[in-house]
Image (cartoon, rainbow, N blue to C red; front, side, top):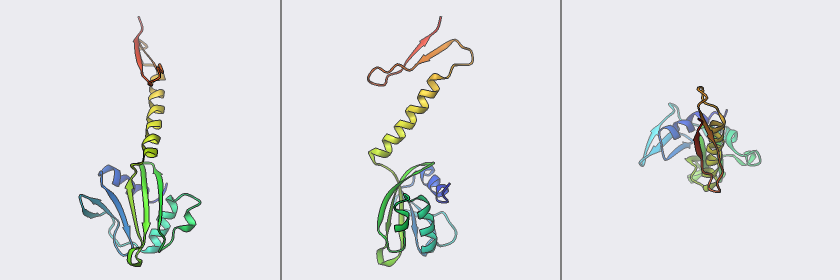
Amino acid sequence: MARLDKLIQLLHDQRAGALRLAAGQPAALQTDGRAKPVTRDPLTGQQIVALVREIAPAAMAPQVKEGATLHFSYGAPAGPVDAELSAPDGTMVVTLRPATTSAARSAGSDEARGALDILLRARPAGGNAVCHHVPDGDRGIRGEQRR
């Protein structure tokens, strides 16, 4: 588990617009244009580099360094995020936003379909009701009552 996963969990739980990591400042959630610190101490550029390397794609991890400009997506346990690294005025800034790409939505849909398929295969404790997953071209679901 990456160390940023806890902060990403907060990002999703609080429905914040972004999690911002900037050298010389505490990590902060951005909501409605206001920043709410979520760490007590300011982060250093080296700390940010180490945190971001944990979540960057393996091929991109060596490129994560102070002064770099990069974009990537990360599938955190709490939900996918889009990461943007920049260095305005020479200060490292990383912004993590809840992913809004169609690929992220599609990945979430696939997970939901898989969970639904498992639930539909499970047999109720009483054994009276039977649910069948019946693909009808529209991924429809039909429940039937056993007599």
